Length: 374
Image (cartoon, rainbow, N blue to C red; front, side, top):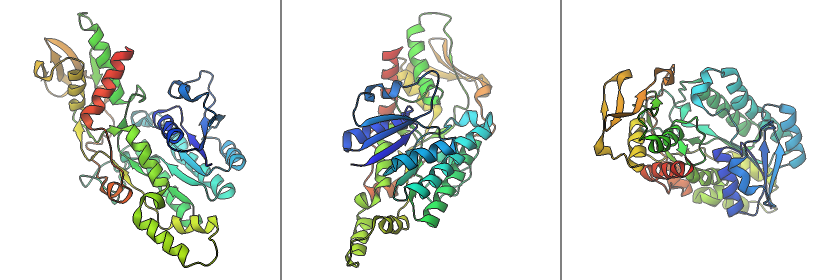
């Protein structure tokens, strides 16, 4: 029975990964949460009484805490979803972002190296690492060209993962996850901000004084997927010899050439030289204005009854002479990533991974959920 530490378990990805593993394995989930005076456990409240789900205090910014936890638990897997993951705020607190997204990874890798060298490690990478893109769509070979402190922090973490994998033979990977959303997405992210405000406007529409939704750059293009599809892809990356037929064959051939059983540490070191890091994406890109149009459409504001008027900062989305959306320059970033458009062909071909939810289904799912809540 595997022991799996998941950080960031109260967030979207961490909670979905806990659900996935509890439903698809017999693993023990050790859920690391930062100690807070006010708990934010909404995403995991349904797991609290599960006998295979164990909450522990874990602060990724505390190197001693990380070291003690890994020394005590000696996990088989360590999945790091904890981060300061909001790109927009990374200009306001760049030092904290580097601490949470880069130094924390160093603490984890170093503790694993010392206390659990056979532990398989995953760190959440991001399409924001590609930043100022030079090729469309973006594959694994695209250069790292971040345009924000957040993107830079993820690039730095990627290099650390590579160094520890190649220097110490750790099974350590950092996938590139393009934008992934869902009903557990934090309200500060643009997709959830849109769907939550669409639900609010739907309920307030008869009130002449309702407040429009305010957004920044409407022409930024993103590759959006359902976060539930991505956690399965992460698990595949952590078990590549089970899903990648070529690697499975190579490992079996390697074992057949050795007369005695291969110690686990030797097998881990052998695998560390063969494993790959993968892009997960929908292989589509859509403008933020498309997300807006479809979200309002699913709430009953039909696209053919709405229109965009004005240009630049004066642009508005209007329905029956009422402004649904307007531009707020405060939401523009100092350096914008204009287009993120992934190519996950390698993950699809080598691991057999593919998304199950398309763009329109994702938007509808999020809107329906917020309409139900509002």
